[in-house]
Image (cartoon, rainbow, N blue to C red; front, side, top):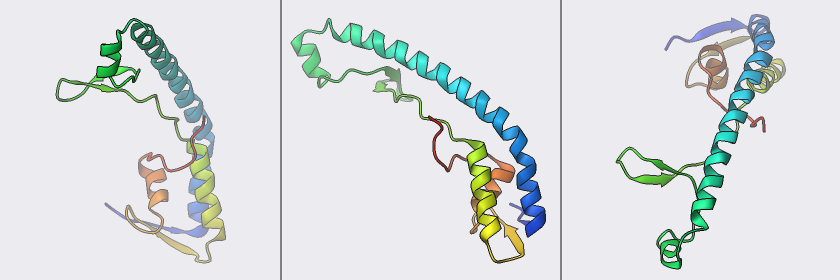
Length: 134
């Protein structure tokens, strides 16, 4: 992985240039997340309706646990997790800008595994690393 070398002002301007698209991206991701939540809730309600018809022995076999079952990679069934909250790209970018602004150095080497690896992720790939949006 190729490291990026930036002067402080160049890095700040690069990060600031990413902000306008971040709002649109966050809105689209949140919209998709809301759809996934609704789908999970629909499946969960169906599971609760089915669980209300269990006999005591069936409930005991399932450890009195109600949840949405999904096939796992081995062909069995596991309980699915509710959709996790998406991470705001704008918050990540603003956090990176604040960190660079307070840093004393004037030149930055950004690598995938160094001190500023979170900025490398912002510049290249999107890895969730900050507060969730919901």
